[in-house]
Length: 410
Image (cartoon, rainbow, N blue to C red; front, side):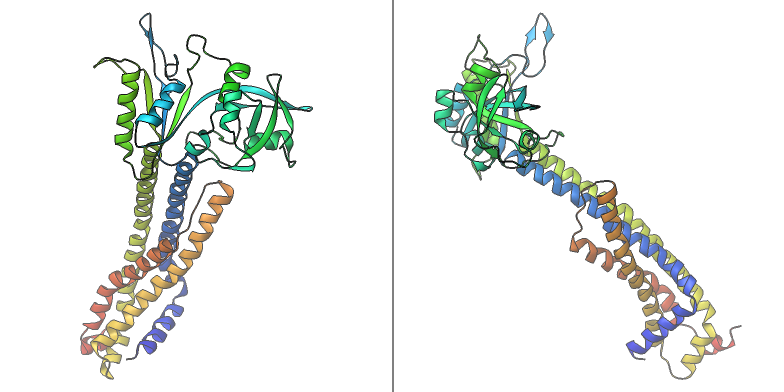
């Protein structure tokens, strides 16, 4: 019996019992749709973490001041500024793996332009900060070393700050006031988006480090060279863990810490933190796909059940076909094609349902979803495999029927 003839017989048989066929396909439809939707949600989460890694800057290590103990009370991270501009210079000079080390200070202030004002983050940075953070300047210019040396009153605006102060107008060359100090806007920063801890990185103004200390945020009079953080970019291809250990040893030496004494600074390898989050998102994707695949197995069991019922109902038909010359493999192929057809039709409907579900989640729940062609092919292929696997036993049972006994079956 030809394959096309078997396919026509299978389709005719499915049309005779439309409701039963639809209910049989329901498990496959739900399974394929769930797999595609869940994988899309997991892939979207993974892609978002990857974007956050990129937005922070590649191969980035952040140095922060550590905690101190006062009168038996241990204060939190950054309670006493111990890291300095000189530490940043030493790291860039003495650790071969370090590409740039950019010290910075941070605070908040109300910014005024005309009759508009906006509360935002003010960061005092050096010219190396842009390279350390992989932060491009989209209009105007970046800060120059001369700006830091001369404590000039120039500023670069993040996208959020520029939008709230200037709307769609070009801010370059405009005068803004930060704590009543006039600053000239010399450029705007590229969009960074949200950080891994939910902070809008574009809600910021960057000014020269020296200007921030002297005129806006204030300096640490006990240690005028102190800074709040150092952003260290490690050269591509270098071992991050080894670079981190070298930086730690250098800072302990510079801060004259004895063996066994706690660090008075804190190193944070942001790439490792976010890569861990990415791995967690990937594991979650696999878990969601595995859970959704249970529906495919349930759908396969439903196909087997219905095909066994179909074999019983059509026993006389099977006996008649064998009597007129049909071979066992023809009967096997016919019922196997019926099972696979059920799975494939259910798979196609499930693909449409999964794509629609992913789009609905993205639109209504505002979840990031990413539908990969590989996920669609995997779900569809799995649906076909379910049809073959669960349809083979009923088809084999039909093919092994004795023609005489089948003709006598009532």
